[in-house]
Amino acid sequence: MMLNDLRIGNLVTPLNDIGDPIDDCNWRITTIARNYVCVEYITEITRSSVDIKGIKLTRELLLRCGFYNDNNSDDYILDDWIELRLKDDDWVEPSFDVILKGSYITYLSDIHELQNLYYFLNKIELDIKNV
Figure 1 (cartoon, rainbow, N blue to C red):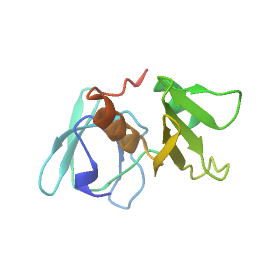
Figure 2: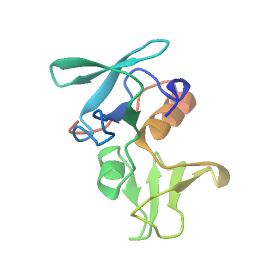
Figure 3: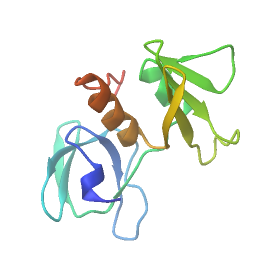
Figure 4: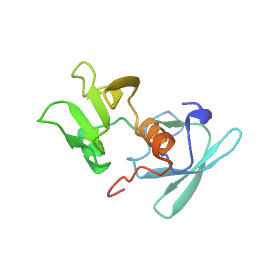
């Protein structure tokens, strides 16, 4: 993951020395420096080199972000104008087409990408419940 893909407040999963995830998605980026990031877990702050990975979007995470499922399909809608369509029915390594007001604009697969897109479009943070 590249540092220029990140913003303060993005959710990530820090990796340990051998590249395994340390914990779940309750980590937020608090500082982005030239060659490291700081992440926060509830009240603990730890310094990490760029050893982090994105958190894949799941059904549950999309619902926590305020998306609703359209007719039990794999389409998820937010604010009646942002639609995410699951590509290839693949929930193991999910990737979504992003449709805005009926037009395809890009694809994404991780929560930090959705957070950044939402902030770019609305100039407010994406509200993620129970994080």
